[in-house]
Image 1: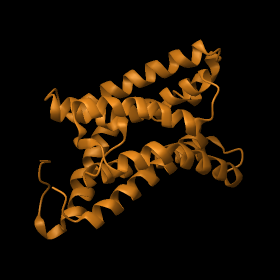
Image 2: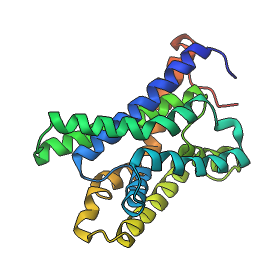
Image 3: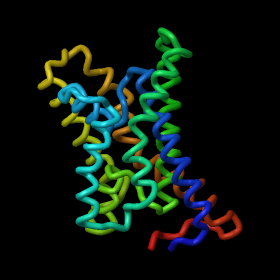
Length: 224
């Protein structure tokens, strides 16, 4: 269903941009990034090219998976995410470094909590807009909705844990020091690995879907 196209496009753009900003906030917190970004951090430490370019290449590979098994999740938001999220994340991080200099531990915790809430909030908006999701988000959605395997929140936990493990392995293979691992796979990663799925679903039900349909239409409806 593609009604309210203008609103859907706005929700997609908003969701992608706010997720990119959240990743920059995670980096400032330095307590672990979200699971997919922990994988990207490990990959980034191994492959000597700019992060934005590496992000595009990695997501292009994941795009093939979605194109093969269910193209329904590929759309405007997918390509906005693929081509811009890495660069927006880097811009946000560089900017925040000039505003939040040598943050104390309480400030880092505050950044972490803010990042978790923002990334789940943004994810709910561009998922509900149904104009395409990120190539990584498409994996869990295809497993649940196309292959009919499990519930989204639990499948998402599994895919997140796979990313975290791969990120650590890649980081160590690249010559990284064990003491540096908590900056990419730390408290923040654990929190997002176990709570992103449930939090995204919470924002889907209580904010994103009602916003799309208008509150007068009542409760959320299943995706078709």
